[in-house]
Image (tube, rainbow, N blue to C red; front, side, top):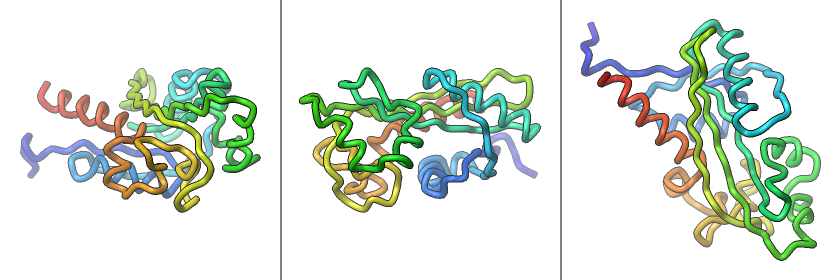
Length: 191
């Protein structure tokens, strides 16, 4: 039998992205057990928060239980925050070089990496958001181009792709958002 001091939270992370799943597990486990389920969720157009809230509600309804969803945005300051929550589609369409080309006419290459996690205890429960932001800049591809736009987002002199996993998880938008989630779960366990 598990006593109160041994109780752990379990989250059902809704993702089909193996890289995201790996990072979330590296950051949350063993304190929070991460299970995974891939669902093809319709994504609405809207703000970072609106997209995540809607995705979280849909996932909770489809699974019938507690879920954790994530939406990542890459916001170019020179473009008023675009591509923002549509970065996945931009990456698929134009890739690293195309993203750099979007900023070719602008001296400002600064950007924000934003990760928004939504947690819902299940259908009918309002999602709770946890957001992390990392400031950086867009640079020509450096490092392995194996995980989204990591090879063009520089923070602290290195692109995410050039950083070792532990260092990236300490400074990344995803790591910051998950730290807030961990703090929330820790508080819930003591309440």
